Amino acid sequence: MTLDSGIFERPLRVAIVGSGPSGFYAADPLLKSERPAAVDMFDRLPTPFGLVRGGVAPDHEKIRNVTRVYERIADRPGFRFFGNVTIGRDLDLADLRQHYDAIILAYGAETDRAMGVPGEDLPGSYTATSFVGWYNGHPDYRDAVFDLQQEAAAIVGVGNVAMDVARILAKTVDELRTTDIATHALEALAESKVREIHLIGRRGPAQAAFTALELKEMGRLVACQPIVDPAALALGPRCEEELSDNNRARNLELLREFAAAPDRNAPRRLYFRFLESPVALEGNGRVESLRLGRNRLEGNEPFKQWAEPTGETFDLPCGLVFRSIGYRGIGIPGIPFDQKRGVVPNVAGRVTDSNGIVPGLYAAGWIKRGPSGIIGTNKPDSLETVERIWEDREALPPCPRPDPEAIPALLASRGVRYVTMADWRQIDAAEQAAGAASGKPRERFTRVADMLAVLDGPGATSDTASDK
Ligand code: NAP
Image (cartoon, rainbow, N blue to C red; front, side):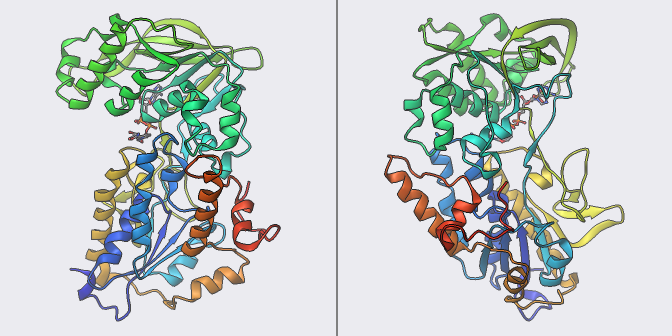
């Protein structure tokens, strides 16, 4: 069954909550159908693109260029953007049900997983998500402060987010100044005293979650040498079998190159540590050291080995700890949520609750499957969800208020200054113009009020703007 054989005389009306990759990859097939759906995309920020704007590292400009694809999707007839609208506050699920036949939740995973060890919340201990948001100028983290006067930093977790955090700490200001890193972050990093960066993996080098492309960059840092203990790279037979995975094999090759490289006497050092887990963060009023427990790998099956504590512990002196052990989704009032997994429960994109499938409610991206995969992983994932909408279409109860003008009118009646795609393009142009002056691709607005001032003039910010 396709959109074209449906009972609806008018276009199917679909709301997408979230404007990151999964939202755009859901919008694309809906808009490209022979009888295109009408798609309204909502975001709590005035700016679209989710983690492509707020998560991808500033020195990975090529990855960010995927926004050009999303801009083209947004140009298709039937697409509208409503930025600066928080679902669960400005509009709730009942409002969306009134105006849309189908709702796709694609709002990602915006918080982080906790380590669950004593001292985790001591000053000096931070989440990778806040650091990433801060250097990317995300309004939520505009006023975050990181104590970069410490000489040693530990990053717990060895995924690509941990690599981003390590790289930003390891790079010189000259390596960063021509990126679109937020100026407040560049200024703080210019004063950084961090000299030692420890990346801490609970399993071995063959199980590291980072990808070889990101690892390779660590060998090209101007003022930082990657340090790997050759003894840590001795693999058991099951780990050897795991090298049948190309990425793992390439990671091992690179780690061996790092281990064999002569000492360059670089001012900064990046230590790759394996088979160690945090047991506690310790210090008098702030983090002074990280207590680590040594692990060994257990499990007879390759690709299913886990870290088992040996009982041996030791202290790693460090004044900064970043936990980077995975993102976590959060719930929206009135919408089913699996607290344990941090996702919206669903079967292949159809949202479920204790009574089974919830008609007309769908999920895509990280809030559907959990925080894994690269940007492109979201394309097939979102298509799977859209295919479920196509299958369900005949059975979906048409929404009571399909008039496309009803939603902007409702938002206006609630005093919400929603931001359209045309508005975003004005903000975008202003950011790019500001960046050009200092040789950066853009100078981001880091406060919602400043974004809205581009559109309405200074001081015109509505009370509902999600500035924090
Ligand atoms: P991730 O890839 O899932 O890595 C999480 C890391 O944390 C793993 O090393 C994991 O170890 C470790 N970990 C989990 N729980 C732990 C615990 N309790 N104690 C110690 N370590 C723990 O997550 P991520 O780095 O947040 O990245 C999320 C996704 O975004 C990934 O798919 C990533 O590739 C993608 N991403 C891509 C890029 C890029 O392409 N440049 C950049 C950023 C993010 P175990 O393996 O033992 O669980």
